[in-house]
Image 1 (cartoon, one colour):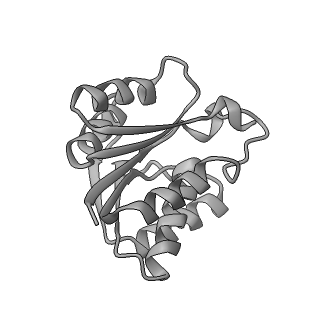
Image 2 (cartoon, rainbow, N blue to C red; image 1 turned 90 degrees about the vertical axis):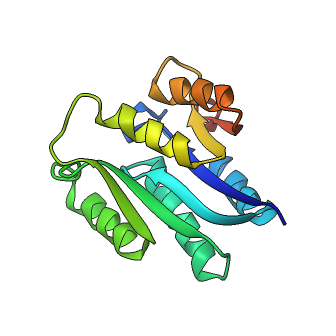
Length: 161
């Protein structure tokens, strides 16, 4: 088996079409990805929306015996402060079960998400991206990942609706 370090990038929850069904393409592609190669590490920027779903699926796979560690990138310390209680609870549940976390900034700064993307791309060799095809940080990260020679798997967020 090949060993590959993976990463996930997706849009913020409010950028997704409504209704959005991650079970349609994203979660099956993630499961297939995790079963194809030996994964030792899986990086993602932990925020509400698709990242929560991906983190929870990676943790389910880990708990079922897949040899993988989840590393959560946190753009800034208080990002969860204004979220509804249910989302904050999911956030802390994921953090309690992940292998480790990496906080980019203590206070918010305008570049904390861009720095999070750069850090993720510096670690991951393969990028799974949920993207709607529009100009965005995710689109920019896909371009950068390809320039770095990383394998990129894009799931079309616009087709998910």
